[in-house]
Image (cartoon, rainbow, N blue to C red; front, side):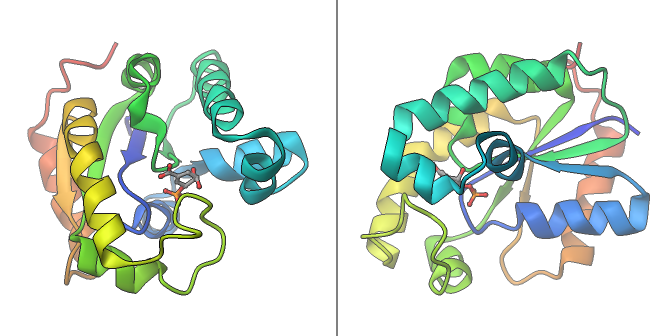
Length: 177
Ligand code: S3P
């Protein structure tokens, strides 16, 4: 199985899809936020608070570089929602595998993340309007970075994964190296 790199806004279902693939397709799961937290020995919120967002973004790039040197296979990498913003990360993700963007409407995202306290980007702005505006700014980054896009609104994880596998079977992944 090719490595699958999951990208997309917070709350689109990256972790849920990754866990489904782990259980049902026997893939290894890696989560960039979790790996960064392990390496730094503190939470994403603490990293944002103590060292700032640019530092966190540099950790994301460093992590992708490291993953590229690991020769991963049969692995799904769930990426933090801002990973696509740096073009250097996009190149690294393409090297790692097929990049799949999960999508959802701002309303769906809000419903999924409104009770979460672990997302510094939304800390002071947990509302549909803010999510909508940020999503508009990021939309083209998710689209450009990915070979496959899967909408996750009103869908079970099983259904989203079924669509993902159909799309994968049709994709030749010209970006993969
Ligand atoms: C971020 C998304 C988060 C995490 C960090 C920044 C973003 O990951 O990387 O809080 O900028 O969208 P999830 O998308 O897994 O919530």
